[in-house]
Image (cartoon, rainbow, N blue to C red; front, side):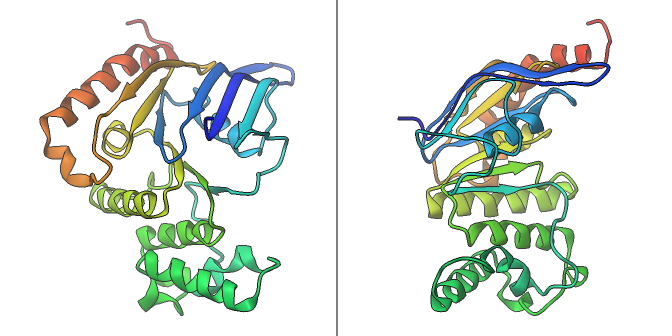
Length: 260
C-alpha cells in the first residue's frame, strides 16, 4: 500500500474570478521515498502540499495517508515545514523546538528526550539557549525542522524550506535533510523551484504543468540512498537537470504568457 495517495485531486478557488489551481492529480508516495515537486510559479505546487497536509480540502478527488482519508486537518504522523521562518523570536531554540509538545500527553522524560535528540540531531546543541535573532537563516531553518522532528512524523512535507538561503548554505542544508531522511526512514515530499535541489535530493521528481497544475513528467533519479551533495559533480546530475528543464521550459513560458 502506498504511504500517501492522491486520486483525481482538483482544487478550485471561488470568487468573482474563479481559479482552477490544481489538477486533476494522481500520485502515490512510497513509504520512505524522497519525492520532489518542481513547476512554474503559480502552478499549484503549494496548493498540492496544502491538500496533502489537510490544510485545504480538494474540490474533487480524495487524499489518503496510511490508508486513512485526509479530511481538513493535519493528520497525526504528518509534519509540515514552510519557507517562512516560523520560529518564535521571544523563545529560545530549546523552547522553540519543544513548542509543539507543550500539550502532548507524554511523560516529561519523553518530552525532554525528544527535544534533546532533535536539538543534537540538527546540530543546535551549542545554541539551545540562543534566540532566533542570534542565529543565521540556515540555523533558524534547522530550528523549524527540529520542531517538526520532535513530533516523530512519518511523512514530512517541506514547502521551499531553503528558498531564502544562499546556494552554498542550501547545498549544506540539503545534506542535512538527506541525513535526517536516511536516519529516520520518514517519507519526504519537497516543494522547490530549484531544479538542481530536486535532482540532488530526490528518488523521484514530479514536474508540474502551468496552472492548473498536473504532473507532466515523473523522473526517477537513480541515486543511491547514501547520496549527498557530491552528486552534483556526477555527469548523471547534468543529465537529470537537463531533462527536468526540457520538461519544464515550455510550461514556464506558458505560465509567463509567452509563445515558445
